[in-house]
Length: 302
Image 1 (cartoon, one colour):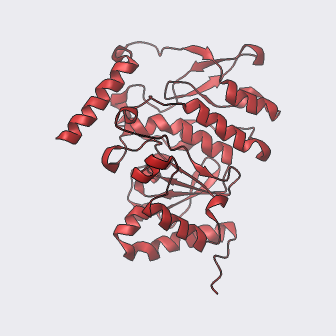
Image 2 (cartoon, helix red, strand yellow):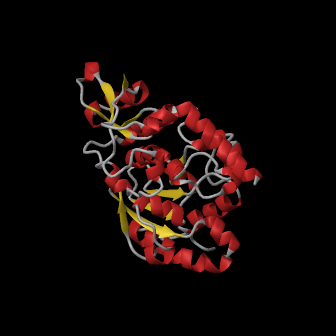
Image 3 (cartoon, rainbow, N blue to C red):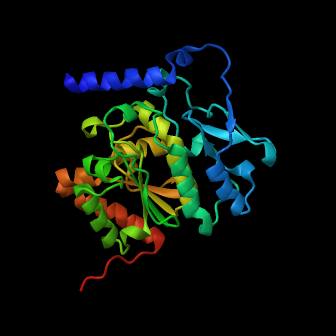
């Protein structure tokens, strides 16, 4: 009961800060003008990329579109196709990352990817966009690794160790993920690692739809900046939100999916493998499929 009361209190504080009347407004969507993101725009401009193709984030949990001339740019908050407007309807709607927004026609160049990721982190700020901000989180766990990585792992959300350090996958599950990466013939610093949500859910529970959907635009931007060849969804929660389908892991494993121009494979979350080590062999089959696609030979055994 104490946990439920804490969760309810977090939602009440969240709704109060957001202005609960806005969630029940009838009629046409409300459009808000705000200054364009200076951090992200400066990165794109320095790369010689037209800002009209950049994706920015404002405080609303929806992507924004830029249509004004470069000298007068404003962000216009617009609904994402297929993405419901109210928190209540978020529970019943799943939209794949491919359907949230088109993949940008103009991509961030390799030399500017690290700066672009930094700009996204600055946009997130000390985020209070969803109830997780009020549920005892200590750190926003943005992501970790090579901005030019060919391989990107997506987990569910931070745990206690990650919440304390601000880095994803550093606890026991992270140590196992490191071993998996090394077995593939890579180093952790050669891949990129992120999560569906960037704040720890209370008691490590599964993220609520409103929480995951609020974080989606930021993870989508991270993927679009890194431009990995392959994405590995770690567990059913990551697979569900990336692909927009609710299906068992057995039905998703062993075949390729697509996500933001990359091939996507689904495997077990390392935390699950710690609970059931018998499934490590099955996870290794999934990683071997990824290795074959990427031309990796695996770690040499002396």
